[in-house]
Length: 127
Image (tube, rainbow, N blue to C red; front, top):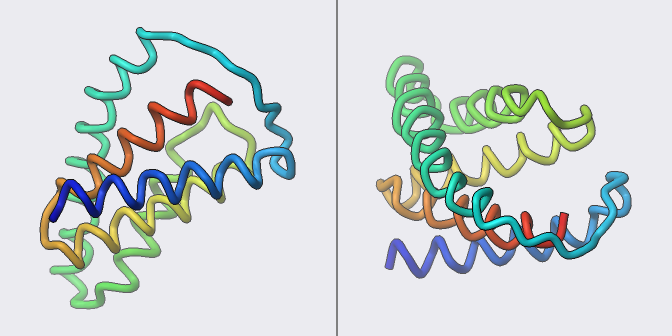
């Protein structure tokens, strides 16, 4: 069930991101970079371990407020993507919140890792 949840949410993020990308100033094309895809596998695992496994759970357990932890960890996740303009950082922060919510709902990092991988692998082909 964790992988299925991750696949579903990964494709939801892909569809929404592709729909709003022109509004974010991101042109859609086709770019195939196998190194980027391979790199995402490792970096996404690390990001999910840090942002959901460590940061989100630490905030939640320390303050006892899951929704505050979702919001804060999402914002920090968005802000760490320094290579993107502010409007895109906001979109990434929302995605970070979704990933934290999935982690809390499923009590597992697997849905967030799969979601993150699917979203990045597909989006890197078009953006």
